Amino acid sequence: MSEAINLIDKLSKFNDFWSPRVIAQMNDYQVKLAKFSGEFTWHDHRDTDELFLVVSGSMRIELRDGGVELNEGDLYVVPKGVEHKPVAESECHVLLIEPKGVVNTGESDSDLKAENNVWV
Amino acid sequence: MSEAINLIDKLSKFNDFWSPRVIAQMNDYQVKLAKFSGEFTWHDHRDTDELFLVVSGSMRIELRDGGVELNEGDLYVVPKGVEHKPVAESECHVLLIEPKGVVNTGESDSDLKAENNVWV
Image (cartoon, rainbow over all chains, first blue to last red; front, side, top):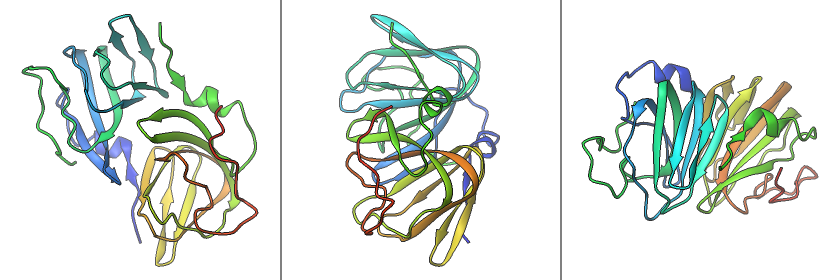
């Protein structure tokens, strides 16, 4: 009997912010969960789009020409090469999908760079 | 100002079963929504894994060696080449992710084959 992966269960297993955990892999793409709180750093991913889906809470993806408000059940794909800065005024839980190996801070040099490929 | 894609809003825009609608694209992958009810057909996808995430309701992915029960917030990746049959006793709403061009019935010949790349 195979087992499903429950998002809420996986989210209960870690508490640090801006530190994505991998929960599944599909071909060479990884599904990650992350907890956001406060402001991340401006960055872009030169070689890939990045999918955000809000599981609970609210956040904003700042873009150089505006931004996108995301509430629970909202999805947004940041195109490759587009600078963005995730911001969450209150704690927000997010599902991310991107190719394996993508670093959370992209092309930027930032203390917020998280260890990659950490499963939960 | 860019706009988020809301899953519930997109699900309100179609009512037919087993007919996935594309809501977003990330690189060469598409995010789809589908409504399941009853039994689909046994099939596999020779060249790709396929991700299922239950948005609301419950379903089961039958596998030749068992199966997986999926409730709201549950995710499962069917590996490429693995025969599976989605079944939903009651209506179930599902988010799917797979490469653009994947046909819902995979390698099977079935009347349930849906038109591909239909956006909502």
